[in-house]
Amino acid sequence: MVLPDALRFLVLSAFLLSRGTAVNHTRCDGSGIDRLHLTKMQLMPENPQPGSRLCVSFEAAPEWPVRTGAVVRVTHAEFTIEQPLCQIKGLSCPIAAGATVQASICRDVPLTAVLLAGQRLEVRTSVIDEAGAPIGCLRAAVFIDDTIGVLDPDLEEIATQSHAQLRTELNRVASNAHGAVTTDEERAERVRPLLRAAYEASPHWAELYTRWRDVHGSRQRRSLEATPAEGAAQRVLSEAASFTTFRSNLLHAYHAGRRIELDERSDLQGDVRRTLSHFA
Image 1 (tube, rainbow, N blue to C red):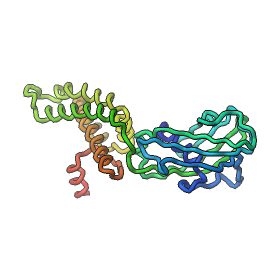
Image 2 (image 1 turned 120 degrees about the horizontal axis):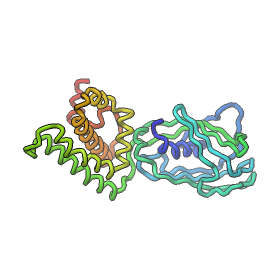
Image 3 (image 1 turned 180 degrees about the vertical axis):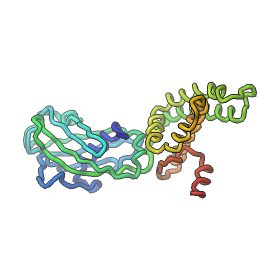
Image 4 (image 1 turned 135 degrees about the vertical axis):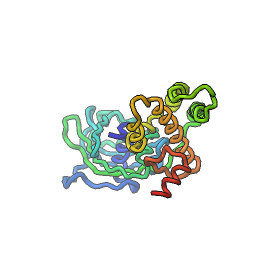
């Protein structure tokens, strides 16, 4: 499972908007079961954007009573998620059969959803009552926008200060500006606490970087795995440079309004990426 927290709201949104123009849908099977009778819904914005606020409002007139214990179950090839239906803001259970209900869900789409940028997420969503009987089931899709939403300026200022200190120290140890610092171990000792501070100052970037490395970081993993055990210091230096460049690259794309396209070279400097692309 790549993004359990980020996906929870996105896939629930796909279900709620399964009859809207923004999201394609089909029945799960030929039974035609739909006892929720969704009538109105709205997604703001239309395509979920990593780092932004996403709100879904809807209106329904369930054919069956909805009581505490009813759940929304979302399944995908990689995960299964359950959301108590009665915990959605605006819903108060029990809901009488035929009663018209209105509710809304608003969540911040995690920055880690960048890993799904430009993808259409196909999911199967079923609603099950407290006794385990099906109320409705649809297969739907939601498109994840390939740009980053509005980043919190206060959080980014703190993160930028921490990353700037880390980059400065990386440049100093690389140029031997300290003079007496001559070994990788000594360089790593100076960099390690600043790397830790950068992770702590920007947990949203740290999580995205870690997830990216799990999915796309094969080049870096091969490099680290090829480093002998006694080269732990070099691994610290490599990770620090990778993390700061990764964030910097995405911020450049964000400020320029460019599409986000993550791959295994996303932690390389622009000139290095261009050189590798030339010889690809």
